[in-house]
Image (cartoon, rainbow, N blue to C red):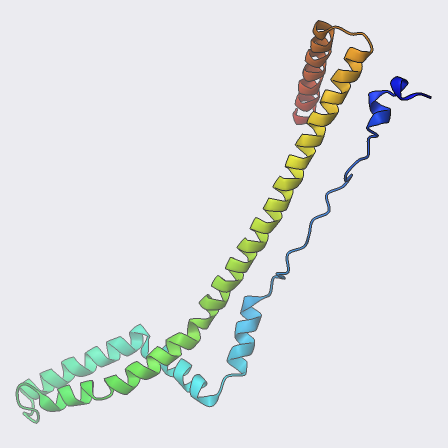
Length: 191
């Protein structure tokens, strides 16, 4: 066989690049944030348990209503029954204000501990979004590669049809028939 009689398919053998989609796995593995948070709460120190308990106690509407009732009763009793705390009620202000500073610190610590669940959820959501983006990128790259391969094969088929002696009009007519057949096939599968 001489080099003059080599066909285009023999000169450039068709070797499929990849038959299947083989994704590269992303290193992130989803985890149960609620179980992780519960494990952290279980392993917490006594100080952390106290902070969380006091935060739950003092950040409730029941506590608000009890303190509000205590202040109203204090003022009403002082104004009507006994004048044990003269205006501007320095004892009431002292009893109401002094505990606020340590309670504020404890509540802030407790809110930080209770907010840990949201931190874990946000971190997990971010990592899952990164994994999803990674997977989408791989699928899009694979689809682009498939498109390139389809175009290459289409050009090869057109070249073979023209080499077989078909005119440009005949090749175009075959493409129109194939496109109509593809549309009918896709409508049949959708219907």
